[in-house]
Image (tube, rainbow, N blue to C red; front, side, top):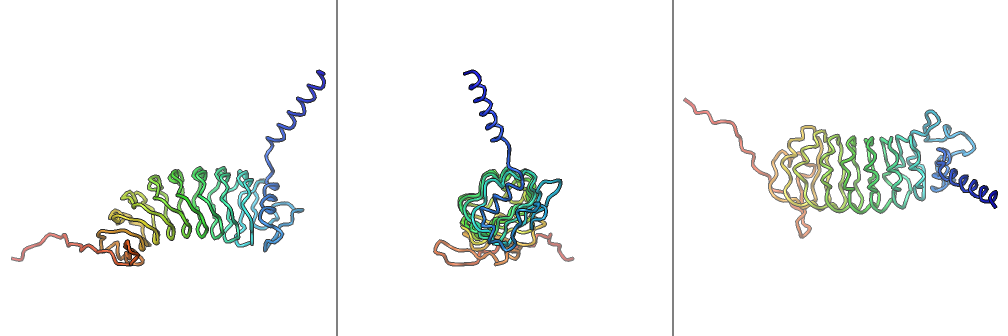
Length: 285
């Protein structure tokens, strides 16, 4: 009886150890291949060959550090196992036929610098776990069917330079933490269902060069503090419900000259404040 008990414990221990052994990088990529109809990809993988020879896969020291499968006819859902590619620095699945939600497990990719899932048919909310990607520099999720609100902890992405989430169904207001993302250079949130106001704290984004918020439901006064953004070269915040006065400088900076939509859905130009010449008057003698 004692021998049987010992044998039983050994078997349980063996199963437990096997459960804790993660999949190899190759096994994870095979999961992706199978989940996205790999046999119909434009450029397929020969699963009998080393992964370093597979198109779009970059390997360093036997670890996958980049995966670029853009425009390769991937169809299906992104497998959760992809979040186990611990050394991945770039994931580019742009312009495919991916559907379903973005796996929360992608928030485990601590080395990730580029995440591009744009131009697919992804739905549901943006996982809050993506805010754990502290090394991320570019997040491109545009041209999908994403809904819900922007993650409250978006500001954790302190190294993010590009945030492109346009043409989705994102709603709610911009989270307060957004205004702490001082590395941002490009913000493209247009063509969503965002609402609320734009905080004067937008002036904190000193590196911002391109701001696009057009075609949403923002309201309230356009913060004049935007004028403090010396690096801002492109801006389009038209087709919202902003009101009040704007300076001529801001109106000229906006691509559509501050064209807004009223409660009746009618487009109109915002009032432009007259900029007074503040130079001192010198009397003639």
